[in-house]
Amino acid sequence: MATINIYRNKLKAAARFMAVQDIRYYLNGLLIESNDVQTRIVATDGHTLFASRDDAKGDNVGAFVGIIGADTVKTILAWKAPHKSANDVPVVITTADDLAGEHRAAWCGNVCVFRLIDGKFPDYMRVVPTDVSGAPAFYQPEYLVRCSKAAIDMNTNKLGHFDFKQGGDGSGIAVFSSESFALIMPIRSTVADPADIAWAREPLPAPAPAKAAA
Image (cartoon, rainbow, N blue to C red; front, side, top):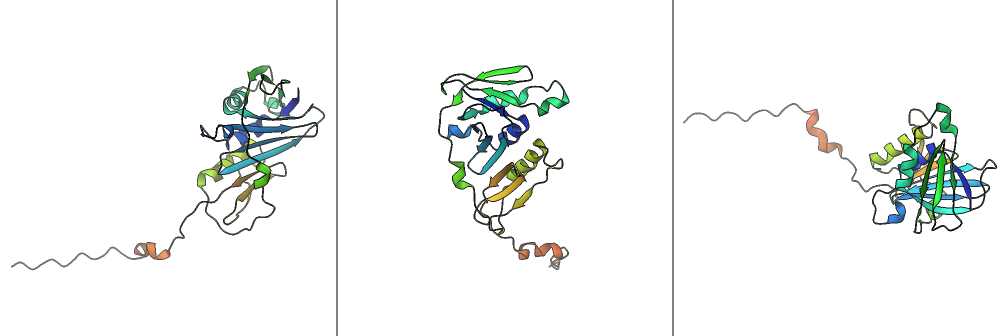
């Protein structure tokens, strides 16, 4: 049995990077890793990856690794805060002795019982780069919007700003704080050619001269 403390703003941010009804069912949820020292939340859809950490404040008990499904995450995020300061109160997850058993999440009088996704989450540590080239790359705008919304969720920037470094053919890194980041895979795209828009620098073409009557 383990006791894990997780903040809802981190859950909300991470949930933006979960897969949605992916055939790789183990991506349709959040990986939680926790021990007496630290708790980590990881989510990926195969194109983006979000990771965050929170150092324990003496309130974590035991070690735990498991995937919490999207339905459970949505249930926790749907709970209404009884007062503004409630957002600073962590969700307390109490795990069963048997990982295949029923686990419990509680927050401000709300409780849900859930089971973990039975699957192996990808080894996220293997894809975290040691360096990023800074070379230009193309990225899906939707992925950058996710990062902006995550920054707002976690209150790292009220305007949704975040630090970003492009990675050329490798992942770009969006850094929200020293506690959380996202990786974004680039997309293949052709470089725009100014010659393709040359017509907009010219006036309308003149009509062809009218043919003389026979």
